[in-house]
Amino acid sequence: QVQLVESGGGLVQPGGSLMLSCGASGHIFSINDMAWHRQVPGKQRELVAVIFSGGSTNYAESVKGRFGISRDNAKSTVYLQMNSLKPEDTAVYYCYASVVMTIGRIYGFWGQGTQVTVSS
Image 1 (tube, rainbow, N blue to C red):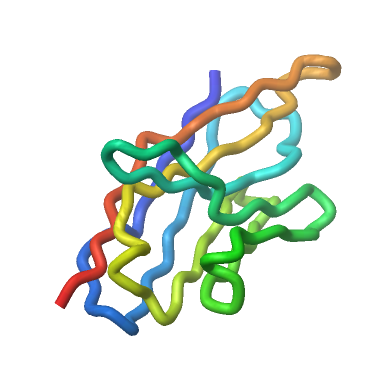
Image 2 (image 1 turned 30 degrees about the horizontal axis):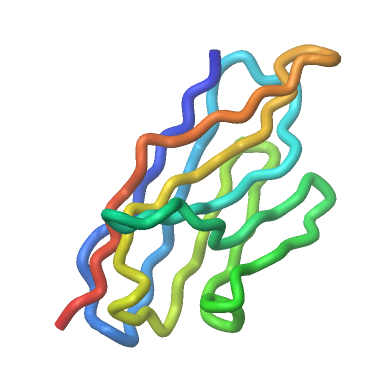
């Protein structure tokens, strides 16, 4: 199987920055898209940013210009640089990877989540 391990969450003041990392390991032939989602209690999980295998990216409107997603294919790792953080960015952040395990077998995997709290 495949494991995704996230790190980098924590408490930060409004206007501050954090970088999240998520490394994939296990039975991986290649990785298609990688993404970050977030969820607050009582609300649906929402897409924050996605990066495709070719390097193109998409962002939620609420984070455009503040967050940057990147990936290191050699390390099977995706990053989320979060700048100018706002209290409304407070959530549990989950990484996601679409993994090609063997030719023709593609599965989606989730990390365990990491808490980001923006508060003074």
